[in-house]
Image (cartoon, rainbow, N blue to C red; front, side, top):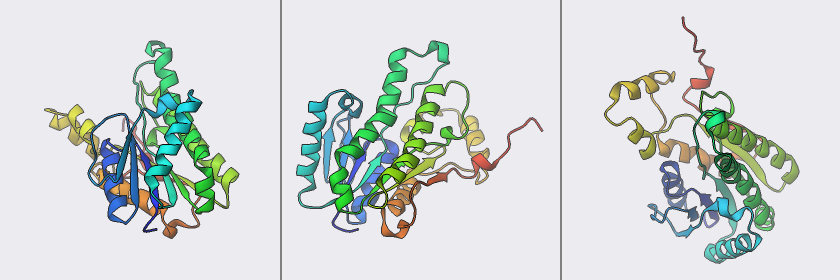
Length: 247
């Protein structure tokens, strides 16, 4: 896959930075998208835009697509990684309507529209789409109704697009469990016991490293995964296989 371009949304997040680095190291031209202006390590090119804002603005989507094509600079677009996401937490009755709409726009609608925008390239290049889902699509907890619903929809989108776009384009989901991003670790600052409890609930007795998730995404984008489409790979450390009961 050396010499191809990959479009990675949410490129400045904890997993996004590693996606940019891992793909660049593997010879891809990595084009990142993020509303955060920081530049990730290994970035060939970064577009500063909020993908949620593209959903209802056809002109902005057209300009964005033109910018991406320019930045490919002759390297065929071979993969889109829909990694950007928002996570608005709270009980259903406490969530603002705008929070629910933003969650669906960024986590579901924008990925669908991005794939549609670049269908000519993906079809011509036998490309791949990797949607970064979540274990919350399968098993969730209180206060996650908006996020869990959006990720369930993203997993469903993967299956639907694999049928719609096959055989030219493969579409898969990579669903991580807790991952040691700077944001997650900041939430456990000065609370080592709580972090240890999070690790221990996973059968592997640890949480994922961002680079581990990025390497699985690279596999799904590569020819090594040539017969995988419509699939969800749960990179969950075994947490979804464990029954949590009072015993």
